[in-house]
Amino acid sequence: MALFYAAVMTNDGAALLAAALAGTAKIEFTTLVAGDGEYTEGERSVAALQARTALKSQKQSVAFSSIVVESDTSVHLTAALDNEELLAGYYVNEVGLYAVDALDPDAVPVLYSISVAQVADYMPPYNGLTPTTIVQEYYATVDNSANVTIEAGAGAYALADDLADQVAKEAAFETAQAAETEAAWDGINRIMLPGRDLTVVFADEIADYSDEWAWIQARLDAHDVSGLRIGDYIPINIAANGGIAAETHKAEIAGINTYYNTGDSGHEVGYHIDWITRDCYSGTVQFNTGNNNNGTGAGSMQSPFLASNLKSWLDGTLYGLLDAKLKAVIKSKRILAPYRYQSGATLTDDNSWGWEDFTKLWVPLETEIFDCLVWSTKGFGNGQAVQYPIFANSYTHRIKGAGPGGARAYWWTASANSGNSTNVVNVNDYGYSHYHNASSAIRVPVCFRTMEA
Image (cartoon, rainbow, N blue to C red):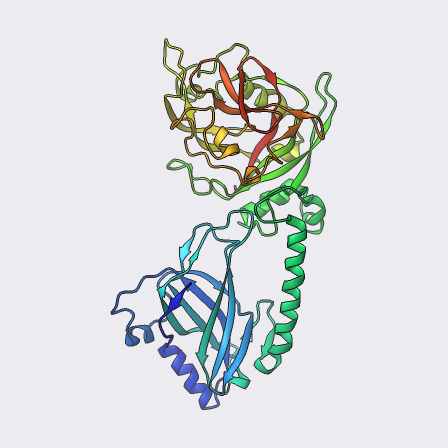
């Protein structure tokens, strides 16, 4: 639980208050700001805080949700900080209030008051599943509290005397929203219900673009993933090929910014969404035509997956069956890939790793599915891999059908089996990690990345 030192009114805040007392200004609170700035004992002194015009290291700014009159000269302000747009966590070491003269249309908001934490709350980064909210309360000294206003998040203004009714409406809305969320997600720790079809949920927004994938690209370019949830999907078409009829699959959101800001120098990963279809493509494919799980040469060919028959088939055959509008937005997946190669030798374990591009289509590494190494090589077999949220705490999305809605299927991962030179890790039809000979023919889901330009 957070504990703060007494709030200090800044010099700018005191000047605004003096003008309000003189009848030449009206205080309007605009935003609450929070940051992770750290203060020395000297910087926490009243004089030092009075002189501040901004936080030391602001991380977030939010509108106020309520204002309650405490006395003729003080008000109680409440704002909710959440982490839905937060890519990196931080300790809430400092908070402040901004206010403006509501009578002056040209006035600029000033830091009215500031408080520094003795014990700070931690605001974690968004995990793509359930947002974290910290309700921040703040008491502020004013002149006549009945005439103080707040700038509401929707752009409306509410007098303090009118806020009681608004608070009741907000409470009713929050209750209804909580009930809807609970019904939709059936608990925080499981993703067992079908996701939403984004082309239906965001039909009005998508109508402004040439197609749904152009909309996704624009969203990522704008760093806007609001309203998108793990498990939500966009239908994709796979054209007929040989004896396999055309198929329509649900490309589900497996992770949102799962690897954001990772990558080697010059290849940092931007805003992205990784997609994995709900079920596997009906056709089967060999990881390799022979029972060998090694890389085949220098550079990227040290990677068993990049050197495999499977990768060649994904990019050379399956990719060509996708719609042009989808192919237009697919980006490479930059990842620290396991290597298993030594010239003139056949290895039984991964022996190195390196930054590589999983271009076009790919399959996940074992850790990206199970959050641990089961059959792949300890150390090098993991690289930087992290579990995709869609696979966490449930077998629901690990078990995939042979074709849309088909019977349970075995499907390939990108990980070579440890302790031998012939097997590759797969997800078996019961949903747990196992292995097959590299020459076995099993299935794959369609996996791809969309990322900001």
